[in-house]
Image (cartoon, rainbow, N blue to C red; front, side):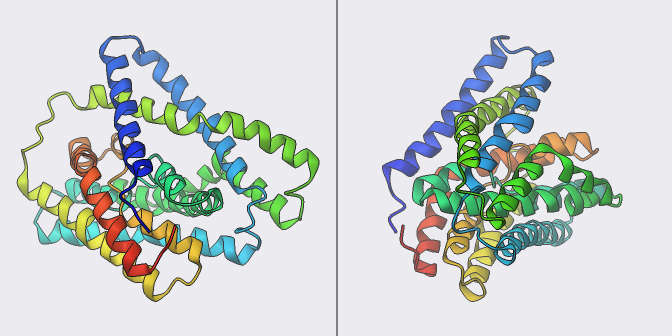
Length: 319
């Protein structure tokens, strides 16, 4: 598989431009702070659920409960593994304070599984593989809001189970139920899926612009070349340990070809852009998670491309 393609370059360039547009809108005051929450609700409660339903419903790669559980379980395990690795690296580097270490562990586990992972997967593979990724990502969300929040806050994470009643998981479970009932190709389902397709196309661009809007405020006072020990830990986890671990598991354990493609892309991802918002919400150190996001995103054009190239050859993946 050739990863040095115009499509991949365009995906990364488009992401950077949309982030820059969001930052510019916030800088000019064209999007005020009071409107950000409304935009966030629109993205999370409308656009992303519509995209999930469109990509999962009728997907022939998700035709059994066992298959769906495999995709969910791999997504969950990826996050938990990243958090454990981050915790060990934080202790090895003697990062100062328990809050700093917990934040580092949380940021280590939460990669950019959606905003960048979805368009890169779509650029390299067909839309059915994107559907597999979306099911995988619900397992990711489950881990983030249970194990991740438990580690970040130092409190039990079972309260995060209520997030399964949010629109995104509901859209996924509804689409899976229709698949398993054999109704994915029914005319009413196809009509709803067409409507969801039109709405869901807004999810990635609007969500990325919104991230840029939030970054405008979060980057004030940020110094890129400060805290070299923390930056070393970021590089070790996200650029070496996690990519190598995911590819080894995919090569040695996973036989599902679509899931192997998903794991290839996930191994190459930088840290999640929204992580610092969750960290702020649950009392972590925002500057730690912000540094994680910024450092890995700046290196993304090189690091992501290299790991996609190496991983595709290691796993023997063709487009």
